[in-house]
Amino acid sequence: EAGVVQSPRYKIIEKKQPVAFWCNPISGHNTLYWYRQNLGQGPELLIRYENEEAVDDSQLPKDRFSAERLKGVDSTLKIQPAELGDSAVYLCASSLGPAPWQVVEETQYFGPGTRLLVL
Amino acid sequence: GQQLNQSPQSMFIQEGEDVSMNCTSSSIFNTWLWYKQDPGEGPVLLIALYKAGELTSNGRLTAQFGITRKDSFLNISASIPSDVGIYFCAGQQTGANSKLTFGKGITLSVRP
Image (cartoon, each protein chain N blue to C red):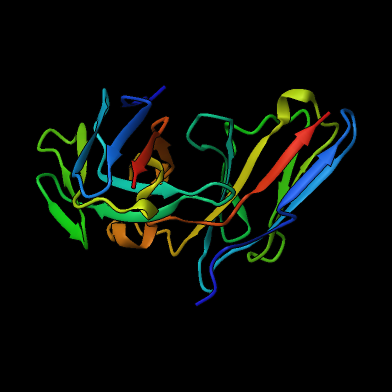
């Protein structure tokens, strides 16, 4: 079974430029997550989708970050304009969910991440 | 916000030794998970714990979900060089707030 696919794997841009990341979740997984991982830290949630609906975007910096999951499968995360502090690894994860009484279905599986460097 | 505490930041062991990692929280979680992250990759799930007091093994790995639901530990027995990496604990609520809260990770080095 294919895992979570992300592209690109690496991206170097100059500050104030836009950048977009793409994620294809595991087939059949309804819930999709975007995380940001700063150097030396654990991942932190940016946004969670259940199918095509963003159900938790409280940690997404909405002035410059946007995300979409139009058909409830693939998702894109965009930053416009990028700032130096946006340099990080952007991880996508997916789970079967939502299933409040069946926790196994909410186990999250991560993609390899996109490593962003803003100069 | 919720915080998970993992310490020390780095651990150095000899190949063949056992190692134990602990994770504590000020908050209660319904699920505890342990992930390993290799350089240039995303976190890979090692063990998931769904019930307080649960002890689960996966090969040379053993993890336990603390009775208070505020802590968990991971043991690696007979370490090998490929055990090198960063080990993250994560706590998860269920239902409407099912986001993962991660610790900062422990970098494990294994000397041959």
